[in-house]
Image (cartoon, rainbow, N blue to C red; front, side, top):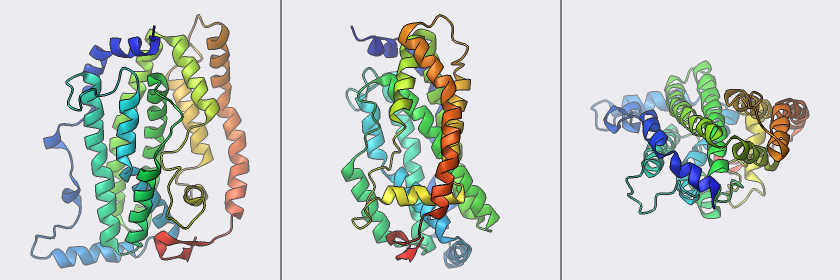
Length: 328
C-alpha cells in the first residue's frame, strides 16, 4: 500500500478548490504589457529610457538578477519534477485531473517570469547575453535534483519552501531597483514576486491539508527534507568556465542581502509556525522526534547564518562571464 499516493489522490476535491490561486489567462499580465512596445511610433525613446535607467544598476544587482532569471528559465526541469511525484503527475499531458490542471496552470504562469526577465536583460544592454544563454542551456541540460525522489509529500514541502524563497529574492531585487531609480525593473520583479506569493500560498495549503490527513507521515517527510537541506533549483548552473557558478551567485546574493542564510532560517520558522507543527497532538515515535527536530531547527540555522555572513563578506572578487568578466 502506498499511503502517500493514496492521500494525494484523496485530495483531488481540495485541489480543485485551490485552483482559484491561478489567475485567468485573460486577466494575467504578459511581458509585452510592461516592456517597451517596439511597434509604437516612439519605441526608440522608450527603449532609450530603459537602457538609461539600467545604467544605474550595480554589478552585484545585475549578477543576482541574472541568476534569478536563469533559475526561472529552467522551468522545464521544474514541471518534470512535479510530474514525477506519485499521485500528482499529469498522466497524459492533457489530463483533466485537478493535480494535472494545477501543474499546467502553475507552469503557464511561471513561464512568463523567465520570458520577461530575459527580455529586460537583453534590452538593457548591461550583461553578456550569450554567457547568460549558455548558462541557461547548461542548467537545463545538467538537470535538477531536489532530493525528494518521487515522494509527493516531500515535493509539496519543497515547493512551499522554494516559492517563498523566490518571492523574497525577487522582492528584494525590486526594492534595490526602486532605490536605484530603476522603476521598470522594480515593477517587473514585484510582478514576479506577486506570482510567487500566490503560488506559495497554494503549496502551503496543500501541505496543511496533508497534515490534516496524515500528520505523522507529513512531519517525517518535512524533517527528512530539512535534514537533507533544501537544494536550490539552480544548483547545477554552469557557464562552462566557473567551477562553482552557483556558489558565486549565492555569495553575491548573500552579501547584498537579496537572499541570505537568515532568510533560509526565517522560511523554516515561518513554515513551522504556519503549519502549527508545535501544536500537532498525538505524535509518537519517529513523528514525535520529527516534531521536536523541526521546532528547534530555525534557531539552529539562525546561529549558522552568523558564520555565513562573515565568510561571504570576506570572499574575494573575481571575473564573471555574465557581466563581461568584470570582477564581482
